[in-house]
Length: 457
Ligand SMILES: Nc1ncnc2c1ncn2[C@@H]1O[C@H](COP(=O)(O)OP(=O)(O)OP(=O)(O)O)[C@@H](O)[C@H]1O
Ligand SMILES: [Mg+2]
Image 1: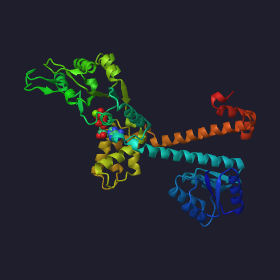
Image 2: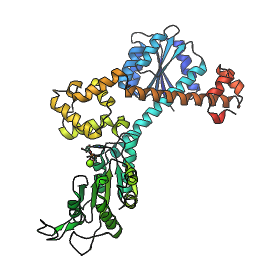
Image 3: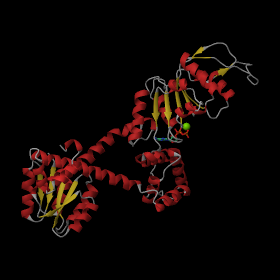
Image 4: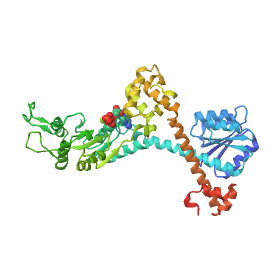
């Protein structure tokens, strides 16, 4: 049963509210002034506080501020006398959920209380969920606060235990190698080797001997027989980075190895069995390269049994601050006191578009640590990043991302609540929309306009 604290220094109103709320099935507790309210708050837990604004010695605004600071999960509704609405609006800025003007209508009160409780429930459920996800967010040292990265972690959990080939897509610096390592780490192969080869860094002739090995004397300079990466990674994982740069002739050889699970050294005639899990990564879509004749379609199908897309950092701003925290901890050691990031610096990190993704963010934080005397401020961040964001904000290309998110979620919330309320009213009128509209004080046309299309009949 939700617990509600009512604070008002007018006994008649206090009693009235108490009666109404108990009648609605709430567990209400009255307090005749701000001091008493604070005492109760110290010892008991409330889901909601309804407080008058004009009280002495502690007025409602002061009580609100204290409550918002110490009990942020509790919802607050302010009561205000007619004519002091400006103060009430001020109260909402300080964290109150809503306000009710006195004298109030019963249904208005009941509805506002319901909405406040629902809203605060939703927020604290969200917090619980976050806490539960915390350990998952650290899967293999991967920070994953955003929906997109959680999806990536979910995929890792599901496919890591298998031996399936995985193709990882992502712009440069998004964490492709990190994901590949996590796939290895959470697999039964984790005790065996993880080998990485960058296909863009090796010329074709060298790549073949690097991957499959060579026998002594097979080419000038081959003074001894050498094992290739496949042999070295036997029982483990081979990570083929920038697979899009692999020359076509090596692609054919790789395809054969994937089919036969056997390799043949350069210059050799024996076939050796290998058991290697292949993970490939690319920052361009292989489909395009297939169309251009630069990538073998059959190899593509072999590789992309499962593909994991890592979203660019600009599409998951929720990850930025947790990543900064992660980087600071890694750089300074877990026991160290971490520097604070002031508002201005945070806003810059939030609004930059991060073409170099997490790697660029890492470099920016290392830069800041080098220059910061104490806290991380705008001046300690790379000038290029600060300049880009400031230019963007000035010319209106960037609108503050935080604002966009806040506005969107509040709007969505209000929209849902309105819909719910309309439906409930219609139900209480046994489906008679005309009656419902008149009860709501709106025209039938407005009611129809606000209803979802499947309920307009
Ligand atoms: N979600 C994340 N959580 C923690 N660290 C991350 C995350 N994503 C990337 N990093 C870090 O960012 C850096 C770049 O990651 P990584 O090398 O895996 O990216 P990449 O996609 O392989 O980059 P490139 O395309 O340049 O090869 C690494 O230091 C990595 O640890
Ligand atoms: Mg890489």
